[in-house]
Image 1 (tube, rainbow, N blue to C red):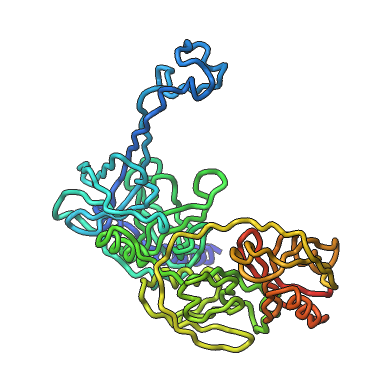
Image 2 (cartoon, helix red, strand yellow):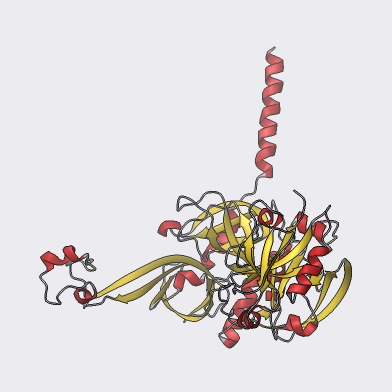
Length: 465
């Protein structure tokens, strides 16, 4: 019995040693890389309005004791609203060149009047903002110093899901804190962040980590910690980093020209759902569905059409619609791109010259006109567009009424929607609409293109329940 216990104990010890041997040791990595990681503090001077009483409908010379009756806030320590006040923010960054260039997040230094960089050796240096790009949340700083320690830059395209990564930064002001985890996913798209294929990790990231480096086990920077998903305000196991390959492209443009030239195709796209894939005759749901081609855009000049499904750019597969902005955004104005598309069930290649991303055009709402209407088996009452609506949204018919419980209602169509395509047939008039509805199949869904509040999209439409 004793012999069996000894053998069992020896086996457990060996198993424990083997498990420890498989876990990474970050000590050397931290020693080698920490000197190039910096703490960044920025200050914004805010000038308070000294004429608050008049703003709130109160006399300018009103005694302080009566201010609260007018809801007037007290903006300074002495209880008076006039005077200056500073707003401070804290973040991290890392040195990429010996002569003092530093990368961090745009939101760490946005609007700052003063930027202070503290090095690992406790030196404090004033920094100037070379340039920033809110679209990628990246900023480039410069300090006056020579022979500074630098990080080694890696290749974020070589990252794999499940790979160990390490973050160094200043969460809550605790300098040079080290956290580790794995890559949870790649190419993540976040709301309002169309041009960054984020690296998702489970590395603990908190306020103050922003702008700090994400290292692989070779001690190379593969990302810049940028955002977290949280319901509590703190870390909940999901954090996001900007891939270093994206960051370097942006940083180089900021250093060279002070601005970012981002590729533009000029299409509005949506995801290809399983019902839409069936409507378009696809074997599986993938690609980016073009719902609108903007006037004068590179896409229009190349011959792209609403209803086209883009499946690759320069040989890079487009699995999700969010993959397309990532691929196009990495190109520059004037670059040539080869798009593989599916149109009317057939695959073809289109070559396009990429443009430069402009400001988004304003889009107005839809107001149906009150003239000739028609209803049909779709459960819709539609009418012709006004000339102004045609100028704003193109061709189509506008929905005036939707029959409760009918096919249109089940599809989610609402009054004010503009129907511009049914299946592969463009709708330019009431006659086109009647013709398309007459040919609708009873046993399957078709793709219907609508414009709602200026935004175009495709929906699957079926006459059957």
